[in-house]
Length: 399
Image (cartoon, rainbow, N blue to C red):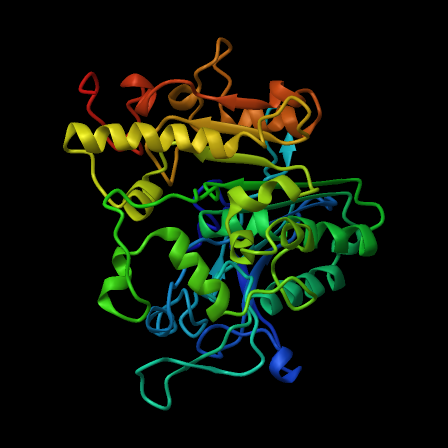
């Protein structure tokens, strides 16, 4: 985190941006990290007076209960006190068949534990903790205050905008694409292209391999499934659907009986109005470790991994319809920090176009509908044909 790379899926510029910390002058509406420290970001302005903008959101998982959030509040993913003085930012605008190397790029570190979605006016106590152990949940305020600053510093003249993020930042991208787009339409009237590019942010609603459960704020919670974890975050951080909420009203209407599902990308991506291009593995290694919660040593576990890939494609179906305005590159590489820039590793089609070329063709309108949906049909790691070191090994011919 905050190591100057800007993000793990693009190449950050050589010139690092300084940390800007936001004022906390709006009382309990002020932006803040879990420990109440100031929220901030890193902004690299264009060196060529470009009017293209990228906002890139950091990932870093979630804290699934109060005790885990309190532990996180002592780290860079929950406090700004130790953040680097500078960090980079990678543009996700495109030029030709590649990523543009120059844009106005704003990198948002992550310190709220709920993908910039929660808000509580008052501090939240840690069950079983000391009286002084409390948490501040201001994720949506961090996002909104950052946007306020960006519009005051040139984003009102943007002509092209991309919201992106990796992992938990990828979920943030799904969740907030329409919120950001609405503000751009209002405050940047010349911005004619507004897009989103979530990277490894499509986390399935999926049970774990052993079908175990647990109780929040106890050791057993680590054995619960991902859906239970996200449901607890929904209530703990007070995720809502209004002005102070990080979830969308369209999704609330869709899931009125189970509103926490709107905190999960497969349940809300079909109501996103902003065109997005998602980068993901159908055998995502973080999901296999933390959702599937098993390795793949036995034939039964290996079959479970293959089933996970099939379940990914089922949940992905709304994105991949012929009428979709969205795009995607879905790899079979078992990865989370995937080698998206390595065309020769992940390319699988006749023209061997890689992820960024496919994304660029979608961005400028050359590929639309099904032509913009690229799904590697092969089993893990291209049936053994992908040898990139970022792809976790999987036995071939054993299932």
